Image 1 (cartoon, rainbow, N blue to C red):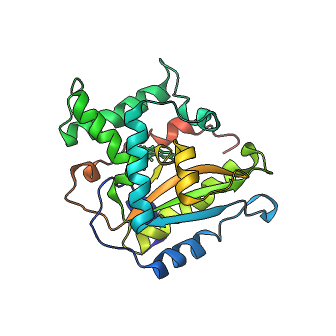
Image 2 (cartoon, rainbow, N blue to C red):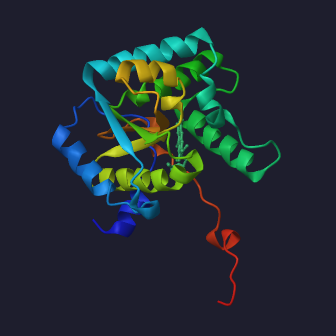
Image 3 (cartoon, rainbow, N blue to C red):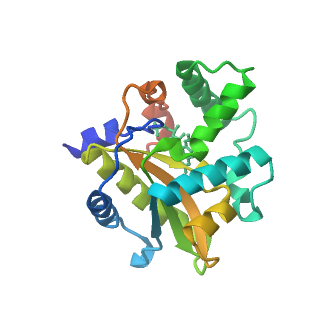
Length: 225
Ligand SMILES: Cc1cc2nc3c(=O)[nH]c(=O)nc-3n(C[C@H](O)[C@H](O)[C@H](O)COP(=O)(O)O)c2cc1C
């Protein structure tokens, strides 16, 4: 597959086939992904790959925690910062949510269906595996976020090349205390993001959504070109 086709075909997939993912494929994807550049070649990433029973446990614990309405741990506060009202960022956030809810038949007022949708996210969209990306706390978060982004995108692109799909998820790490306990992630590691990964179920309605992009000319300032 040509790289530009892989980039164009990647999209967030929120419905997966119940088909286990061989460990060898996950290893190959992560090996390719870690060819990502990083600041001073620090490679500030560690992957916790969760599947089978521990993943089932994690899904149950996340959902239970969500239903309890207890706040996420303070260490995750930065993830909860929403785009400001009245900005284009907020508009785009609302737009993608509307598109997903529309194809999923979720009405704005239907609280039960909205909750069920949130719970899917806490269940890593029922993917057969979830990758929890962590960084070392000895590195400041500002220092590792860019590097993490590069390896994350590589994972998502390599997955497409293997006939797989992904969904990057902040939601998947928000209850960091639950995740730390089940996955045994020590306190000196910072949870950066979760990635649901598996074989895509193209019959799942949300997977039909292709998120729009701003016209590229609107995000370029040419200087001397
Ligand atoms: C850092 C990050 C966190 C995200 N967290 C979530 C999430 O918690 N739940 C979710 O459904 N999608 C999540 N997404 C997916 C975005 O909604 C998605 O990338 C965006 O709408 C663009 O759509 P596309 O990935 O299909 O191109 C996240 C993406 C990124 C990059």
